[in-house]
Amino acid sequence: DAERREHLDEILTAVYQYAVDHDGDFPPELTEEEKEICVYEMPCDGVVLTSLKEKYLPTITRDPLATHDSGGTQYFISLHNDRRVRVSAPGAEEDPPLRITR
Image (cartoon, rainbow, N blue to C red; front, side, top):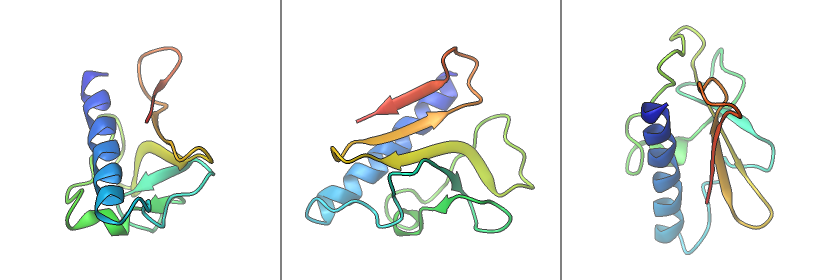
């Protein structure tokens, strides 16, 4: 879970660095609906953080137990009305699952 927590922190840091550089606007891919972060679109049914890929998050990390054939990371992200971002790792060993909100 320490590795998962580090990955989630990297994702949140990238999102907020993007917002700092874009006058407080968050990446356009974020929605209120919690979606899986995808490395690539197909066959993953989530969100590809395209606006973060080059400058802010060049490497999309996966949950240590994620399979590479799904395209997903098994990490989830959402943007709430109060302008807080939540990332989660439902496959974490902790109970309840690992969630970080900033």
